[in-house]
Length: 357
Image (cartoon, rainbow, N blue to C red; front, top):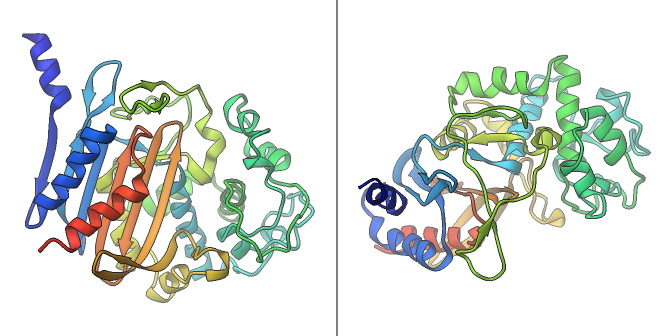
């Protein structure tokens, strides 16, 4: 009998939906059956959840299914929280987006301390050699050692310039790790404390926080790599120090909490409208990156819209957050496997949701 209930739990998917659910359900079911999607899907219109589904296992060692209690590693979605903290300082007149690193972090030893601006960091256009993202150094930087933040920055984020700042997009964690240290310098508090005081506490995001490698977090999911071409063959990733991702990737959250954050940004709860407008202004020459998002026009099936998007991923964890600015629609995908291409899945889900009347 226990085996029966275990199998029943594994097979269970939970969904709450209204209106347009059937076409969406078909897309998600296909992702589950063909690509072994495990995780959460949330669609909201003007902040009200229209569809939410949990499917698969949050922990395969103990057959624990996903549910509304499950907390996901969100990795680079953390960067949008960091961007909001920077924009709050900008709004208060405590930071100038066009001032350089040295103005706020005088101990920074990189060649471009007086050349790289806050705006350059926010748009991944610092122009420095990205040692922190170089595959030769990546395991050393994130997996094998636990680094104090200043040591990490000195060792991996202080290299010479290889491009003129502001002229070339080159994605990195390091740019946002430097921003996190600047936040600490201005507030004279740890990043995680500022995060709680300025965003998580005021918004009552009770299932979202900063993560250290030694923390025991109830209901935190485990993530898995896909082994080879078989989507049903999953393995555990190697160990890593989440702390080293700092303000670029060391957070966990839930789909519902991310919706709270989404609404606080797009309804101007955390920032004034003029500040959000600045945040959402994209730079076409830098790949349509904005400050904390990418923003660009997109056609989904028959529907033209304006995408604001943010992705995160690492060690089997994947997150994908889309807000359709002109339509008030939010889509959040969270997964603990790498078996589904979430960029494709999101378009298919949105197409079914928008164009299936």
